[in-house]
Every structure is written in structure tokens, then in C-alpha cells.
Length: 374
Image (cartoon, rainbow, N blue to C red; front, side, top):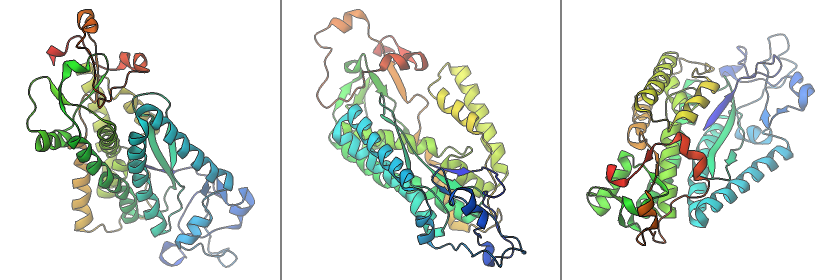
């Protein structure tokens, strides 16, 4: 995920100089006077007017310039500390295999954004990973901060779409390999823990490997499959075409300001669905999106041409939301006392069912009193 920094200090906001060839950014003396040319790990840029353009040197789009200006050494240390902390929290939740697989696909996703930013000379930070020391995932992913209004429509599209596609290149094979090591189990063997809903793409993979599942059947979720499931879920969630999510960037590149109406419609539909179904699995996500705002800032040039290939690829990528999300991603299975005491209430070593910290999630998750009701 990459967020555009919209702080509008006159000496720091990124703007385009009409006198610079191709709309190049110009670095002003005020940037150096403010804070050494850096703010929160982001390179800050101003615009040179016609009067002072002769005094200021042009800040070119070379990747080396972006890399050199991306932050103070302490900011780079923060990136490393957050990365290692997230490695630790994911290891704590699911073990070394889960941590390695999940961190690998998250890193691929974020580096897709970052390297594309470097390619276009767009100032951007390294990824800020977000450790979460409790279940179910051990992380909330990562973000990259990018200067608002620097990229044009075409560059915004390429930067936004590169992350999800790079992450899926890792997540889908991990999921497929994890499914090959899984076994078909009855859902009543999962009583007392989390049951993870299967999106359409996972259902297709399961059927291709294990055949159609019977009533109350699922597959055991080992650490590699769990990492793949999380990768698919996070990627699909990130592709929702709202605000500063990757899908919001892609949708804005496709529809420009009309994307705002799409975002509002989707948020309204999500709230209505939760109220109607009494399913609040996505409540936290909806609240965060409302806080961040559904609108997308304009690009440096909203009318830069995308071309047919990008338009088709954009819509196909946004379509992954349909097959990558499920209305009920997490269900807490509530056993009755008789089943809880049964000697058959056991789990195999390959079943990764999150138990610690489950009480904190019960109020926001659908509950099932008995698995026969599924």
C-alpha cells in the first residue's frame, strides 16, 4: 500500500514547475532551510517560479536522487526495526514458515511500489511494516509514503498496480503449495478456534487439488497455506477502489474524479450490508477508510494517456476483489460443553488454528453455536 502525503506547507508541498521541461520538479532553497530537505523520512520539494528558477538547480527524475534523499539515517533505522519487529510478531503467531512466507509476499508487494517509484523518479519512502503482537495475523501489512501530486495519471497507475501484482506472484504459489500439504477435515474438528472463510480463488484451488468438499468439510490450514490465505486477503482488501488504497489509486487513474462516487457508493454499501446481515467482520476496515477519507488527491496530470493495455489490466486487477475476498473471512466456532469434553476434540499438528487472544475478537465476529449449522 502506498499513501500520498498531502501536507500543504507552501515550502514543502510537491508542485510542478510550468517552466521546467516536461513538468520536472524543482528543488528550492527553502527545502534545505526547513529541515535539511527531509520530513518524516520523505523528501520534500517546492516549486521554482520563473523568477527564481535560475537560482535553483533542477531536481531531476533520476532514481539515484530519490534514493539519496529518502531520509535521515534514523528514519532508515526505523524501517529496519519495524521490519524485524514484524518478522518477530508473525513468527510468534504462526512459526518460522508462516513468518518467512508472509514477510516474503509483503516485501514483494511493497517493493513493487517502491521500485516503480524509483523508476519514475517519484519521491517515496521505504516500506513501514506494521507489527501486531496478537492474533490472527501478527501484522497489518506495510505502507509506503509518497509525495502527493508528483506522479501523473500514468505513473500513479503503474506504481499502484505493481504492488498487488508482485505480491500475488508470491502469494498464489505459496497458497497452492500449502494446499498440496493440507488434508480434508471435518469442520467440527476445528471447534473452539478460528475458521477462515475461503474466497472463490481458494475454493477453485482446493477443488483442483482435493476435489469438491462435502458438507462441513474444509482443509487443514498449515503455516504455508495460512500465509497464502493472509496474502490473498490483504491483497484483495487493498484492491478495494477507495481512497488511498491501491485499488483507490488504480480506480482514480481509470476514472479520475468519477472514482470518488464509486468509493462513496462502496462504503455506503458496506455499511448497509453490515447492518442488514449483522456481520461486522469488516467494521474496523470501514472505520479506518472513513477516517482516511474516500477521496483521492489529484495527480500532476489527470489527463495523461493510459493506453488500452493499462485500462484492461487495471479493471482485471480490480476484479480480483471479487474472487479474493469473502463476506465472512473469520468465524469463531463456539462448541457446546459436551463436544468440548469429548476425547475426539483434538487437532492434528498441521492445523493452524489461532487460539490465544481470541476473546478480544469475539464481539466483532460472527459466532456459530454448533458446526452442524454451517
